[in-house]
Length: 628
Ligand code: RUQ
Ligand code: CUA
Image 1 (tube, rainbow, N blue to C red):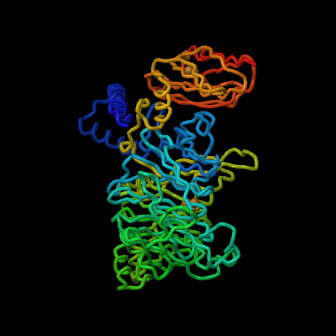
Image 2 (image 1 turned 180 degrees about the vertical axis):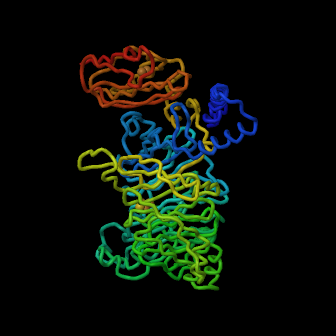
Image 3 (image 1 turned 90 degrees about the horizontal axis):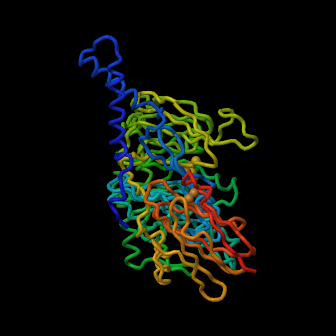
């Protein structure tokens, strides 16, 4: 999979040339200043401009963003790559959805990934793999609440490469990664409680048999390592910065089946999982399996040695670890407070030296409907207030001091957002590299902020400059359903390939089949009949022609077209579209893509390239001759 000459840090490479270019214009600018300037004057002016530029959301045409944003595409089932701070949408990555442009969900290669009866999904939480608490640029993971799945995106090519359907649970919601020492595990919550054996034969009426489970997934193999059964159901989750604990918010500890029942008790809890104890229990065989699969299910219900239940005000929602590794902040939702949990005290809770509630060291009141909290790396936290349509900036240490009786104001600022915010996220704020530059607030409603688009309106992602003492709103960004959550990763962390590596595992199966067929994908253009009704058509492409300008099949044949794009030039992507057959796909430089369809229309059927590739792109076409 490694092909170093083709994998390059695009941004830094391109900046080499850019720096020279901009260096020249800067000189011209300096020459145009009428009065002579001293060196000191020039330096201080340049410094002022540099500071100004660092805080400006304006990214001029041709300039590159400083951050990659990975945005959940909500119930569109995709992930979007945004440039931050420009908030320009750079790319869409189909994950759980059918994507016509690239043929994701249509090609044989993508069907290996999206091996599923569904082409719907509900993405909420995109999170990047980490090493030592910092983004490592390798993978982005995302949940599918709709169909109980977790997907992995490879960041070297920005394509989905694995999707896992998780057994024994329903609706994967909160998702995060292990941060330290590295992302060995992806953690996620099964939100909806269901009978443990959910076969419809028994237990459906008896709510006491319903369970929710915490899921621990091996990040490399993308298999479930183990599950932990809990009391109550689970909502959001996060990991510490020590590699020891995971924590999930839990609402509906009552196990109610309707709204009234779900919010009847005054307290719910945060469930803390000890990774070492869970791993030891799996090793010792202290688990059960259910529903005919072999996933180890541990019992982490109240009283178990694997978990601790920290009482917090009822129906908490988001949970966020502070980048200094000291605290989990559980967001109150129905309570106007957040609960600050001291991670240093978790050892004592597990050793039964203190009560679980003793780990809650402050519960600052922030406003109505706190959902999620982000951090700037300077000791401040930013909490969305859904009901107040505001973000509250507050200081964590001051909140703890106030809780201990000091007369001190922990609230720094409240700003109005437009409107009803869910998640908010700071640049690199969930990692040790939290840099406190930008805050994005994902507002669920845009109402009057954009031109009206009929009854359905976009959401509004608002960008705030948080580099100074005050949060400053600098951009409104309309988005389509529905960016629940996002992350912002510095561009220096990500290295993408410029063209495909011929050994890429994404099309390895197709390459192996070609080899078995005696075909050299880089040179051969061949039609191979396989049995009575099956035909494989191998061809190359190089702008502006296909290797075959015609091929012949019989009516009713199952046709597989395999195309290898010989172009070496970055950004020269071809397409393959067979008219009137619902067949369409992307073939980027050095990629092999294939698609299978029924030749169910007699006569001449044109195929054409649908990614604009050349001045003679319109002429890049050929005929499939279908004999009746
Ligand atoms: S949850 S609005 Cu799906 Cu991330 Cu909180
Ligand atoms: Cu090839 Cu357009």
